[in-house]
Amino acid sequence: MQHITWPVIALALMTAACDNGGSVRITTSTTSDSSGVLKVVDALQCPQTQGVLTRKGSARADGSCVYGGPRGSEVILQLVQLDGRSAQTALKPFETRLTADLPEAMAQVEAENARAEAAAAKAEAQAKGLPPGAGKPETTGVMQDYIDLHRHAAVRAVLADRPAVAFRLLVAHAVAGSSLWSVRTADRKARSEAMADSVETASAETVFDARRRAVLALLGFDADDETVARAQARETPVVELFARLVKLADDEVLAVAAVVMGETLAVGGPLVEAVGAYLKVDMADWWTPDDAFFGLLRDRAVANALLRDVGGKRIADANVAENVKTQKIILRDFLAGTGGRAKVDGWTPKWMAFPPARYTDRIYAPVDRWGAVKTAMRRLPPPQALEPAPYAIAAE
Image 1 (cartoon, rainbow, N blue to C red):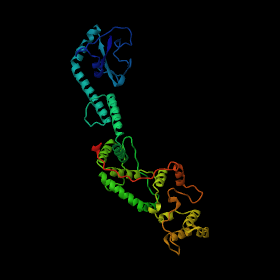
Image 2 (image 1 turned 180 degrees about the vertical axis):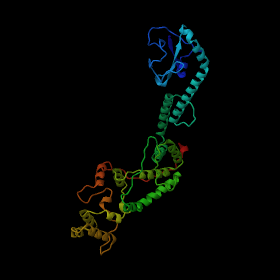
Image 3 (image 1 turned 90 degrees about the horizontal axis):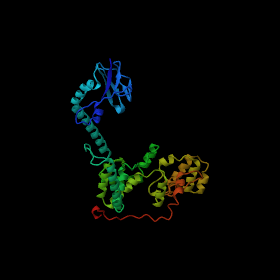
Image 4 (image 1 turned 90 degrees about the vertical axis):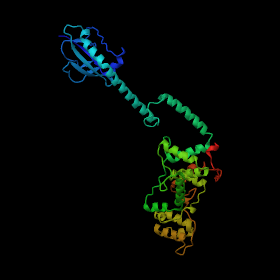
């Protein structure tokens, strides 16, 4: 008995091949090539492979076999008994059945296509920052890129002529960060509790904290926030902050910028040396020797150099052989005016100065940092206090 194998394509593929207005017509061909799509077999069995198709499981009771095809498609091969009939006659019932099933199949395919398009539109909308449920975009992705590039070019061209606006936008980026700006606050972690207490109670820290709190209030932030800078790497916070800054006067925006710059100024870097020297920072105004400082002074030669700086050469030479502890006691007596020593006011070690200096021929990192930048800092105009007029966005 002879049979023919006839492919019934899965719905998603079948409808793509149908263009006859809602009906199915099966065409046949006769060939002696056993590798053709329509082939005659002598036994009721499905081949393991059929071209690019691979059988999935065993044949069903009705003589059909399911095959896996490209891109996850499925194909059903149906074994049909000829019983002396022509192939066209034998396949006619299948033609009729598929024609009846076609409307439902088309509806399923269209629904699936609609779901796929909706999912793609949602993904594209999210990628472009559109709200959920925005639906299918009005423009293609390429057209949107074209529009975005031209609008971006126009905005920055106008922005370049509006420095007051640009400055506010820059400050907003420094405070909140963005997709292109990554801003981090300085790492001011102390190595010991004594060091932390010394820094936290210093007058410089107290003054800066007051400036920070004023700026937090100006921007509507929580007064207990540890920093003004708060990089989020998202555009919305930057826009909200920009809108706030536009409403502020220039001196207020400059106050925000000054605090954020202080928060994001790296500790122990050449910038501290450069800015400190340019502003002629006098450490005697901001620091006095404390227990934490003397607790970290452990080198005898260095302690003697500091004693020479405070008490003079005669005292230093007379105590050069003394241990560190003894030399520190004498040093503290001079600074406090105790132990019969004449009080020395306003002393700061050379290490603290701007520019810094060393006491020995050993390595001292701040001196090397200053050496790397001092040429750039020569012959600069003195810093000037700005007296900005109130800023009005309407004027621009």
